[in-house]
Length: 51
Image 1 (spheres, rainbow, N blue to C red):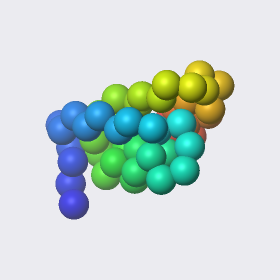
Image 2 (tube, rainbow, N blue to C red):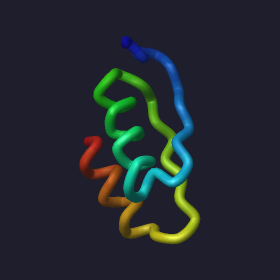
Image 3 (cartoon, rainbow, N blue to C red):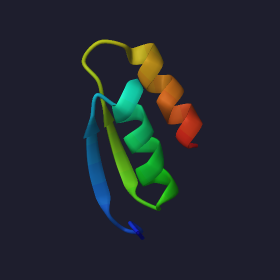
C-alpha cells in the first residue's frame, strides 16, 4: 500500500508491535507521528531507525 502524503499516529511506537508498525508505515511513505508514554530514549531509537 502507498501511504505517500498520509499522516498516521502510532501509539506505543517506542517498542514492540507499535515500533514495527511505525517503521512499516514510514517505509510505505507515510508521515509518522510517534507516541510513547514511558521511554523517550526508545522513542528516539525508533525515530533514528526510521530516518
